[in-house]
Image (cartoon, rainbow over all chains, first blue to last red; front, side, top):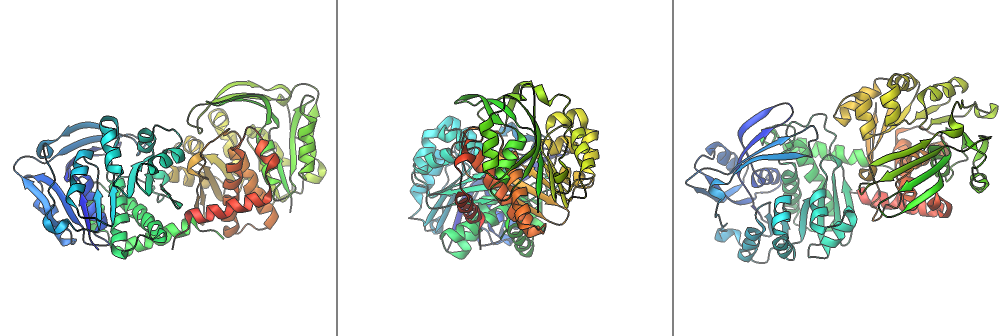
Length: 300
Length: 300
C-alpha cells in the first residue's frame, strides 16, 4: 500500500520547565512521517523555506520517506514558539511566524494521487478539503486538527469530516467540537458526522478509540521524565497509520494493534527534544516496548 | 479468609450540575463494604448516630456484611456536604458536621482482630495507626487517605505507610504526598516508604498499579453519564479487596484481576446517587462488565 502525509515541516522553539531549544526541526508532518517510516515508506506533502536544514531532508530520504511532495520555496520556514508548564499536556503558543506557509496551497505530485491512505495532519481545514479534491478514492482518509481551527473554522472541519474515516483529536478538542462535556457522548456526536472511528488522544492517560463497531483503550507508556511533549500526537498518528499501511488491512484487530504502535511511537517522541529520539530509535526497541504495553494491561 | 473495613458511615448531601440529594447514606466504609460484599462477607468498623437508617443496617446484613463493629452512639451521624462541577473528578466540600465522629476511637471486636485483610479507609491517620495496634499480623494491610490529612498530618500518614502493603490514592494525592510532579517518580518515592503496591486512582482515566515487581494499568469504564461520582474510589477498594479475600491469594495475577474488579465496581457506583446502584446490582452484571473491560484493552 502507500501512505501520503500532508502536514507542516517547520522550526519549533520550545521551552519546558527545565530547558529551552531554539529553532529545532518539528512540525506535524515531520513527526508523523518519521514515526511512520519505521513501518512503511511514507510520501510527504508540505512546504519549507530555503533555511530548512538539508540534513533533515537527507534524514527523511535515509528513512525511506518520499520527499517529492516537499516544496522548497524562497523565504523562511514556518516557525512556532511554545512553552510547557509542569503539566506536559498544557502548552501556550508564544509566537507563530507563518512565513512560506502563507498562501500555500498543497499540490500533490501525480504519483501521490492514487495513495491508499491519506493523512491530513493539522493544517487549515480548507487546505485539507483541497487535498481531498486531488486524491483518487483512497481506501482510508484520516485527519487531525487543533483548537485554533475548531474555534475559527468549525464548519469547514465538519465539511472535511464527512469525507474522513478516522479523526484524531485530543479530549479537549473533541469536547469543543461536539459542544458536549462528556467525552463518550461527544465522540458519538462526531461519529454521526462522517468518520467511522475517532481516536481521542489523552496525553499521559493514553488514547481511546471510539468506533461505530468497537471501543478500545490504550495506555500511555509510564514515562518518568517527559523531555519534550511536542509531536506526541503526530507521532501517534504516524505509528498508527504506518502500521496499517504495512499490514494492508483495516480490520478491527489491526486498528487495535495500530493504536498500540501509535502509543509506542508517541512514548519515544517525548524522550528527547524535537525529533532527536527518532534518529537513534531502532525497530527492535519499538517491538520491545509493544510487548511491555501488552504486559501492562494483561489480566486473566 | 476475612476482610475488615474501617471507615466512615454517614450522610452525604450532594450537588451535581443536574441534581441535588440531601442526607443520603454514604461514607468510605459504606461504599467499600457494599462493593466488597459481592465477593466476600466483610466485617465493618465505624460509628453512626441514632439517626442512621435502620434500613441501611438491614441492607448490610442482607448482603452478608458483619455489622458487629458498627457502633451506634447517641447523637447525630457524621454529615458531609459537597458539590461537583462539570468535571466529575473535581469536588468542593461545602460543609462537614463531625457529630458522633468527634473523639471516636475505633475498637475492634475480638473476632475481628485476626482478620487476614485489613482496610483502613479514609479516616484520621492517627486512628488508622490505632487500629493497626489492635490487629494480629494480617496478611495484607491496605490504606486510603485524602488531601485533608496529607496537608495536615503527612508525617502520621508516613508512619502508617511503613506498616502498610497497599496504598490507595488519587493522582493528586500521590503527587502532594511525595512532593514530586511526575506521577511515576512520585509513586516510586512512596514505595520506598513501606508499601509494596500503590494504586493510583485517576477517575475517568482509570487506575495505575505501581508495584515493586510490576506495573499494571486499568481503564475506567466508558460512562456516558456520571450521575454521582461520590464513592467511586471506595467502591474500587471494596471490589479490589473483596476479590482478593475471595481468591485467598496475593499473586501478581490476582492483583491485576482485583484491580479490574475494582474498576468495575467503581463504574457501577457512579451510575446512580449514593449507594442506590448497589441495591439493584447483581453479580452477573459485574461479570459481564469484567468481560467488557477485557475486550476494551485486548489486542494481538
